[in-house]
Length: 289
Length: 343
Image (cartoon, rainbow over all chains, first blue to last red):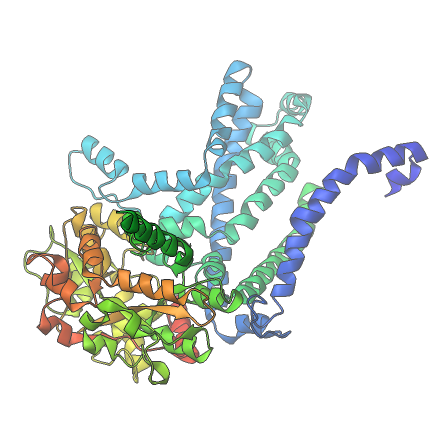
């Protein structure tokens, strides 16, 4: 606001003209559908087909009436934390090597490999994992071809399978954001530390890690939020144990036709995720300074 | 000669005048929309047929409510016929306009769910069972009890459909209760809790089921009889079992919406659909059992619908599904969600 206030009139006009398509798009594509869902979440029944409906809070009340939803919510949050942690633990070293060690052509090639999964449809990726992980599947046959003794590798329809699928899907976000943060670190800082006698892990802990926290945070948020609401990966890879908060919301829309309840559950999820992010932000700010 | 020409020209003109376009509401790929059948119907009667589809009974009812006059023939499961009649969505059927009606199994024609308000509102068309099928590579002796789903030998290779009502009904059969009068829901819950660790994954569609069975993920899984006959026709190593505890029966009828303006053509189409000629050809592609006795009698000796569903001992064990109240439906769904969440 302060910046635009100082702009000349002509500049401001130009800014408005240039920004209006984007804001118009956001209004039509994000704000309107979301508002419709907010309305739905307060109705007793979908207002199609001459059905009786009235305003109600019962959909939000349903969340608290049984322990089922709370249990599933906790399960989904836990999944979100595990996947985010794994993505950071795997993604940060990758980004570090990409940003600080590898130069030139090789870096471009490796970068391409990181982005490559984005080029295929996520459903295709998940089904490929299904082929790989199932008993008598590719992984099982490969392991048994190499090892002299017989082992059954059947990871399909387990929490491990869900975590593998989700980490694979969301890892590029962390690598990309961490890479950008690491790129911005001036190499002379590291050289100065080294010339003052700092050991490798001291440089990592005292200089590189604190300076890359903004990138890691952005990556973690990009992973955590969609994973908590994910439904496709748990459904396909989880089998019997694949019931999560996201799959219950999907059921309300697709199977049971209880859109109001589905919408209410979605907004409870949104509220809790925002709360978690709000609680986490002061902690993260302190880390940065 | 001239007169003959005139008469035939008149007859053709008359047919063209009476020709209507009727709109049929059904599940996709469920018989009425078979291209060869619709073409033959148009050739014989002059009426043309347009299809619209639904993916759940709720959607079907909603479409009837919101578009009065848009449909002329609708497929309604007998558990929903009474509800549609009470809401005034469908009209009684005039059986005198349906020549093949005389061949319908009288037991089905008098089914009380199809005769709400003491008038026939749905012409019995097909019926079938929900029971289970086994992989014949794993089973040499066919199981006779539904208890096989709970057999620890098959732990991790059992599946049921992800549907609260069906799960509760299967458990009701296993606990010796009537599927239409479940009095001991605690026993059902206990039985389903014991079933959960056995299950590898839930199935959602026929396609899912076929893939998991072909990959050997399933040894025993609940299934529908019509789908089982299609899977067998595709060469999957499966056998459909109707256990001693019984099976869930369902009956589909063809109804005429009250607001239809082309009732003549609609009756003609229903007559066409229950004709043995149509059914026998459809059965070759994998169909549910026919309600027409002549059609059932025309099946080959070794055809699935004759061997399994034509056996009077099997039919005696079937319990047909009655309408389920909204309260019961909700409590079954809550039970099912709770069980799934606990995994």
